[in-house]
Length: 212
Image (tube, rainbow, N blue to C red; front, side, top):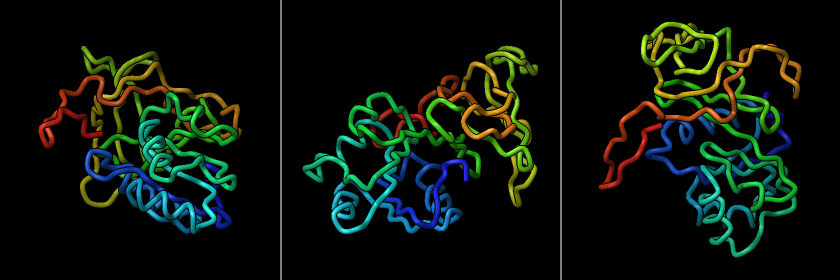
């Protein structure tokens, strides 16, 4: 609902699995919740799908991911695509997809769902009925209303829930006023949240990466 998707949309995702973790896992559920058909594949298969499906939404990890998709397609995005979802850094994506909305999706790796923007820069909308989101001073672990580390306590989760889990992500302070884009009043994590800022990278396949 936050993204404004409906059963009239078709999502093609080129978000890789592996270190994309939660994003690759949760995107199919986001499409399912909107009633939108979706296909989730690598750049080559996603590029082929854009030639055969009436795609309206494309999901990528970042500008490099969109560039790889366009290279595999040998063309620009179809004119039917009105939205590009980005699960990582969106820098440079708008230049590769002129005319399309560019919205960020993100959620901590150990979480169960993604937060989304309703419009660019609106903030990532959280779910106060399912979680308590707070900001901690990284040095003391005490709550703060300003910049700091994102912490989550999950309320509506079965199985292994998180209690005041420190994500390692840093942001400039939760936005608690009315969203200027959609009018919702839920807490919003700033769109430029910095995942893994306080996390030591792990080595995966010889590459140092943040599992986020």
